[in-house]
Length: 526
Image 1 (spheres, rainbow, N blue to C red):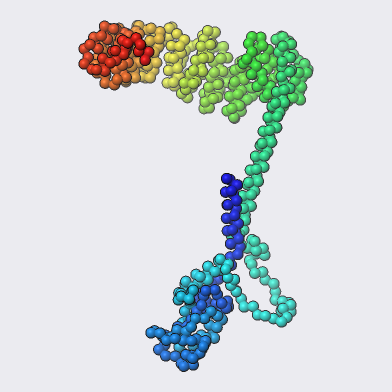
Image 2: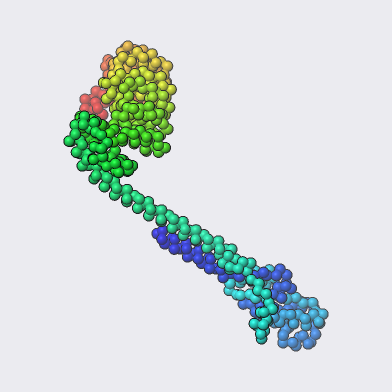
């Protein structure tokens, strides 16, 4: 399809250029006398003729009988027969002038009378289309042309010697076509070069991977951990030649192979891989990648540092913990959580970007793993200026079962936003915090419907008689079916007697339906 469009475009461009090339630049006079002289020079012009109109009431008999005119009388004067030889206009005009007659020349276009402007426009169109070649000067024959040329100095007909450059329109069109082909050639050449580079890189990746497998396997299975740590440069070069280690692409393949094995191996093999990673100076390459301006290289470097436990790179990793790039920021925080000996979480507290759910799940997985080995100061997160960080801190208290932080959370609860209160209520429900029932009852009286529903679910677990009374009142006022169903279910779990009392005293058919639903054992999980 693209080739067809290109051929159509090219054909139109060439036709336009060809028509412009055949066009003739002719200066046409702006008055009737000069136009008559111009037409006399041409002789005859296709579809254009002329006649004389005499406004006098009478003309001499000699002119009436003259076959050159063939006058016929009309109501307003005399009109001659039409003629096509414009060269005869001059002699005929002299004859009429000598007879002192008032006359004018009328032009006929396709045998119909035409105005001066219409005739001139017709001549312009003939010149532009190239259908008629106009004469610009009278050519006088000479018997000795060579001798005549000796006395005439050569003067070029065009302003420039090259007709191609003299025709500005043709030159511009040709330049555009040339530019188009130049750009197309450049693009094709660029694509061929890129394809060749890509093919070469793919071949080298396979070749380097083949060269790496055998020596890497030998080192892992034939050498002990202490032997790998004590390897000197000469021994390393026996496995991996210096000429290969100096190539960046070879190092890239070697790093990918070691990182891939490290994710699959366990125990001593992981330690061997980490020791070999340092012996081959691959750790320096990983740390240097943190200086790159490309986010993908920085992220890959962070992954390598995390996998190979390069704790010496933590100061540089911390610099990227608040990066504007999502991937870099996420991986930097994950690396700090995994490798830091003392995790004070200040780097997470000071983040200015909101935490996504994916980030929270990723960090939670790491924190769960390291919480058994390190003392995590989760309360630091409650002081963050970032609301999503504070909410994540409350989730960690709930997920990790940090009962020791209940007092800290309870002190903050009355003054936080409704979104944070909802998360705190989930902590109370999960950990069974009965001593905060007053806060729960206060939330039940809130104007925020989401907060009320969250408080009702918490009250179903740790509520009291006051909670049941508040829920009963809310059920009587609630009009939305889903919220009414949720409130009734919470009241049933909190106080079955209050549930029976509310459902019995209510005249609402929906309450009766919800009651049957809740009491039906077949529909408990529906």
